[in-house]
Amino acid sequence: MKNTKREFTQKQTLPSIRFLLVGFSLVTLVFNVNAFDPFNTPKLIFLIITNSWLLGHVINYYRTNKNVLHPFDFIVLFSAVFFFIALTFALLSSKNFIVAFIGDIQRRNGYLTYISFLIILLFSTLFINISNVKNILKMSTSLGLILGSYGVVQVTGNDFISWNNPYNSMIATLGNPNFASSLLAIISLIMFLSLFIRNYPKNYKYISIVMLPLSLIAIVLSKSLQGIIVFGLGIAVFALLQSIFVLKKFRSITIVAFTSIVIFSVLGMLQKGPLVDYVYKTSVSIRGYYWRAAIKMFQDQPITGVGLDNYGAFFKEFREVDYSLRFGYEITSTNAHNVFLQLFATGGVLLGTSYLILLSIIAYSGIKLISRSNGDDQKIAVLLFVSWLGVQAQSLISIDNIGIAIWGWLLGGAILGLYRSSLNPITTETNGKLGSRKKTEIKLFQAIVSSIFLIPSLIISFYLYAMERDTYLARGYVVRDNPDFQAKLTDFAEKIYSNPLADPQYKVTVSGYLIDAGLVDAGMAKAKELYASDTRNLQLLNYFAEVEEQSTRYVKAIEFRSEIKRIDPWNFNNLLLLGKLYKAVGDIGKMQTIKEVILEYAKGTDLANIANSEL
Image 1: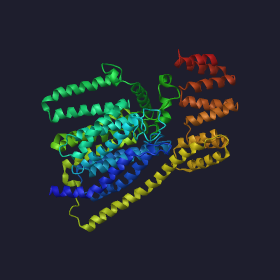
Image 2: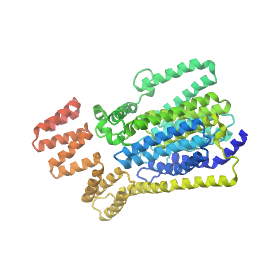
Image 3: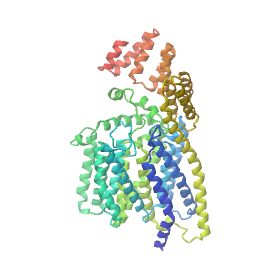
Image 4: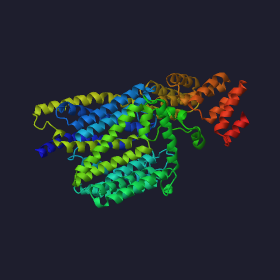
């Protein structure tokens, strides 16, 4: 009887599983060279379209199986609802609603992204079981073939796209070598561990054997420490789990070795111990500043956070003094580079806590699943758990990049799905004996619900695509005092201004294009409109201050420079200009105060010498 139901489940869910995996693959691979942001927004578009359809399956499942749900189902569902409520509360509490909704520029880690991730988790929990989980492994191997090959093409200088890329050439389909190396490391873990599964198809094993060394070479040549850390940690966890559950006589030795490696690695990142030369990078040190700024944001607004994905709008206000001295006073960050701190800082205590609860349930389920499984089932459980941990390790030191984060939610959902099936396989599907008419009604309900959610998703996607296209094209018409180009630029600018989902920073950027093209009045008029809804925008404040200074309206310029000082207190250039303005209006006392501020924090530097000379 169990086998019959399992076969029926596989038959019924396979089309939807395939839809999930196709959408998942597109999110991982897609980019658009004709978009202002070639990577993140295209991935967001495919993400929300895929999950709007999957949401119909999730709702349909709970509707048709509500009387036979296992207690574990309610635990997962309630935790997901908690996360959804916390996320919605964070959205509604955010002052910059559009950024909170679609995510910040070059990130897109807003409400739409996390709702989509949550749907992936729930769908995977409900529909992934031991009979179809190998589809995830096959997809991973296929993506490893594509991404590994492309990574090698990039590091050998043969990329077919001429990226405007300030980083190492190995950016894969993610736009950054850190992200690319981390994703390749996660896929490499899956390919490596799949070799131990006895009944895994040989052709996929052959692909893994060929692609694994090529992927590791690409990771090393990317010169990104993240990928090496993720893969190394995954192998160490695999060895630890093997010693605990299989090679039990080596348990003590492995635990001691694993603990030592972790301790020395952490010390190395802190520039202490024997592994400093191997694991320390300046970028690791920089992350400390990002993390401490996030903690300060959370302490300042613990209930609501500073606004969903609005870290960048507050970083300069909360960054430490010596950050500007070490890395430059104009340098900023739009993310905490730690997903946990990012969610606490931008979404408040409810969002951060609900996220930790979800992760805790996945971790518990993974360990229990491994302990109660055997044979190939246990090897698959170990593979999923180790790979999921790799994603979480990456999230401790990096950004929740859509192309990587989606793997964590899918793998986490797969762990929950297998554990759920192990608790009560029969609840995986209950309509095996239903008549064809009833089955048709269920499928029709799912299609209707999915379509209802798909329509707004397509509308949102259209606006996001238009935003990227129009901003990208507008950039090509920034030629000063050229009437034909000015007319084209104005047309694109109007499209962006009228786009209800256009990123506010894109609108600011286009206003700057108008000004640079000689349409100063039009650009400044729009800039003032934008400032009314975003009074923290430093780019706008600098525009206004510069215009007032050029017009010798120094009192008004002082107002803008003072506001910049409040939001960006350690910006030397702004402080120096503010001091000069006070000098220009004859307020020597305030000029001296500004000078003392500069001398206090920049003592012994060239900045202090400049302040002494010019003030």
